[in-house]
Image: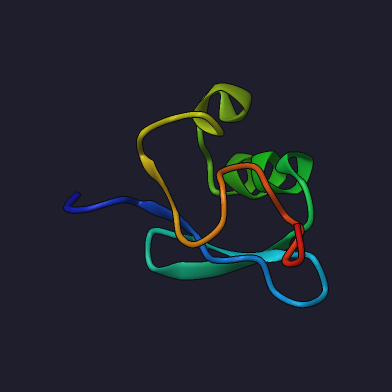
Length: 70
């Protein structure tokens, strides 16, 4: 698989980040708990550990920051 299989987009005005897993939009995460749930639903083994993996590309803002104004 080329590139990053998981992309977390910049925070939006409502304080969430769109999440794409394997080219499919999984939804909007408002916390790492949401991100872990999306990873679990996608079949990731140990999704809690994957949340800090280099397989995730965090676009815009800081990783694990969901506040557009922070």
